[in-house]
Length: 84
Image 1 (spheres, rainbow, N blue to C red):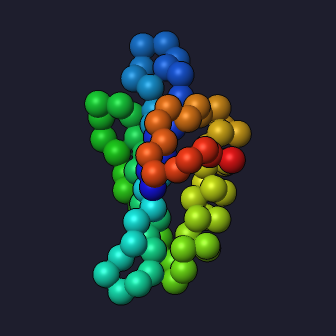
Image 2 (image 1 turned 45 degrees about the vertical axis):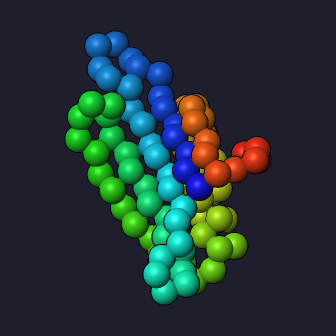
């Protein structure tokens, strides 16, 4: 599952983005990858490990909701029927 959120550009700066990716790992757990930065510039990547899909999905939804409150807009969703 992958979500791409983006802020509207302000002034002459490139828009900021946050990409949230949920993927299984090789040991049966789940990883939540959070990549953020400016479009066309540097980005940072953080990784969180979870034992089960339910807790990883809850963390992804919490991260998504936090970014939506900060003014980001959902631009792309892959692997989901309809975001809540």
